Amino acid sequence: MECKNENVKSWVNEVAKKLTPDSIVWIDGSESENKKLSQGLVDDGIFIKVNEKEYPNSYWCVSNSNDVARVEDKTFICSRLKGDAGPTNNWVDPKEMYTKLDSLMAACMKGRKMYVVPYLMGPDGSPFSKVGFELTDSPYVVVNMRVMARIGDVALKNLSDKSNDFVRGVHSVGKIDPANRYICHFPEDNTIISFNSNYGGNALQGKKCFALRIASSLAKKEGWLAEHMLILGITNPKGEKQYVCAAFPSACGKTNLAMLVPPVEYQKAGWKVETVGDDIAWLNFGDDGQLYAINPENGFFGVAPGTSDATNPNAMATLRGGNTIFTNTALDLDTKTPWWKGLPNMPKKAKDWLNNEWDPESGTEPAHPNSRFTTPAAQCPSISSEWQAPKGVPISAIIFGGRRARLAPLAYESKNWQHGTFIGMTMASERTAAAAGKVGELTRDPMAMRPFIGYHAGDYFKHWLDVGKKAGAKLPKIFHVNWFRTDDDGKFLWPGFGDNMRVLEWILGRVDGKAGSIDSPIGALPRAQDLNLKGLKLNDSQTSQLLSVNIADWIEELTSQDEFMKSIGDKMPKELWDEHSGLKERLLGKHKAADTMTQNAAV
Ligand code: OXD
Ligand code: MN
Image 1 (tube, rainbow, N blue to C red):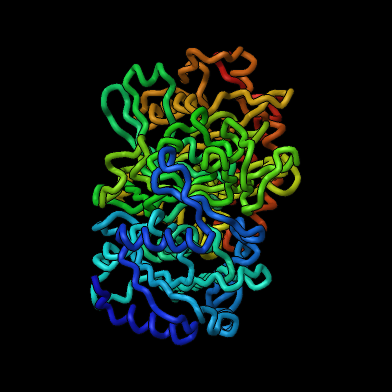
Image 2: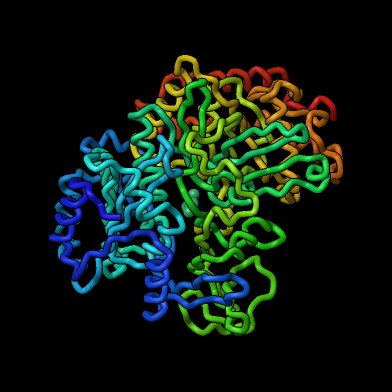
């Protein structure tokens, strides 16, 4: 299909004049084109085809040691006013950044092909889907974009010939020079330019750059929400199906929750869990006043370490469906299969993630901690029949979560949308050994969106409050969960994984008005009798610790919340300061009553 849109064609020519590629290749998204590009990567020594029986039509990719993750210090929101980018973003004046990039990127595609990748974020034919174009000199980006977005003809079909409503994206791997790496967003021009990185989160522009940063800014203007949330469908034994969205910072088990396998007793009783999305949700109001979510993506760019048949069989089955690209993993040379930490059978003979021969005696890890797979969502055994529904799926509950060893109870419910927004805004997680920095240190990550809010965070919180004020809105209930509470010996109290189903059941019970709870200063908590704990080996003390609020700890938490809220400045909405004061009053009231612990009444 030929692109007939003159706005697109003239922009492509303009970019080509500056970057001077040898040729321009329009991507159609076909199978034959994909084969040719993948074979080209094999011929160049960048891809190795892996074991066809284990992972059909799949490739292992050689990595670059300086290009393995998103680079927040090199990520910019270039709005005309600095105040529109706010305190959580790096900012440079757009004119200055365009000039800098023009000079840095001049003729950077000389000797290379420039691929024009038309892509669609969201299901074909959905009124909520949006079109983007990524002009890239990286065939790796093209084949990954084909998995993560709907590319080629389908995107052109969703853009009318005269439309100027598309995201303009330019990407060049340059020399993969970290000193001149830039991931730039120009929200007022719907433009993304990324240079000198080939890593997914920086280079596959449909994902974080468009579907979160640019989309969050569009969503504010247009009255919807673009969020870093998984989407899950849950069917109860009566056959009633409900959907929830959930936001978690990294290393909190988001992919596992998106592909949750319920405990056997739940399966026998008729419960069913389905995946709609694992990372991003676009939420729009339907005519009935409910929020409907679409997953703008077409695949999973999943974190491999810790993924195995034991922890996430649905993810493993998706990979075994084939058509997968493995990045930053090791390659077991005996089996010709990718390997990462958490898989059984440590390789005896392997290439490490940088394509070096790995010495099993060396004590080094052959796979990078940020090993990734890019795999088609349609292959996931738990994928929902509704995952491409053009109108999206109606959302009954929004769940925020974090990793808090002591503070947050297993689950609690907000009083209303404003209080729920406050709970999302104060989300935080403790650092694990997997990331650089001090273990246990608290990172504030509002709505799990801190690196992805494409404008001023204070305006983003205000937008959440405004969404809640929409006339006729039938809003989802908002909850907070914490799977990571530990006992005094540092052992996890909650089994997690499939057993998180028990908490989901309580959440849906609260939505339906059928499950009980007890009030606490932070929100409504489940009591032991409100949760199905059958079959779990929890003693009374463990249950009590999971389902209680330690007033003294929460009073300490207020100080850290206060610090974060002040860092947002004058744009922190008054309503959220009111919520903060309300929480303080409730906690101090309890404290004065010498009641240091709001205990689960049943224990
Ligand atoms: C991701 C991320 O890759 O959140 O999804 O960093
Ligand atoms: Mn993510």
